[in-house]
Image 1 (spheres, rainbow, N blue to C red):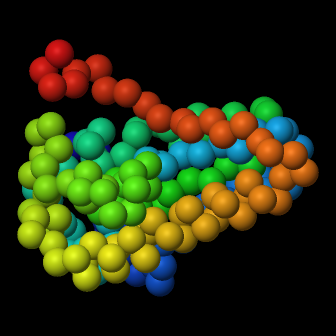
Image 2: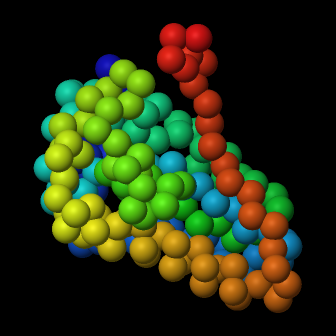
Image 3: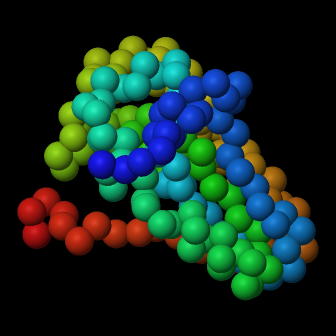
Length: 163
């Protein structure tokens, strides 16, 4: 069991879930992107009905990816745009309206809070999470003097679908 406060608890009081933009003035011809940086779940999502501890799984975020992305941003002097909401609530690496942006189940985790969402609920989540993330990414790209390369930073799990 991990010690400390889970991201669900730590972020519940946050007024919004805007992405983090770091080193915006970096000089590298690259923009780093970390869509699965956080396991935070907004309080308004009701914890998604997750079982205790599910927010610590690889399904919720890419463990270590944000640390690697921040180190890369520092070494390369590159801007970094990182999501602050778990991909279980809304995956910013998927189109806003895509069914898999708010999955009802991952490989091993049921996500009851994503089951049977009304279109209005899906739209609200997209406005809360997806739109601000992609607006920040677009603004970061637009601020570059030349079109940058985009590098997304993820981590992998040693077991995927039992393999």
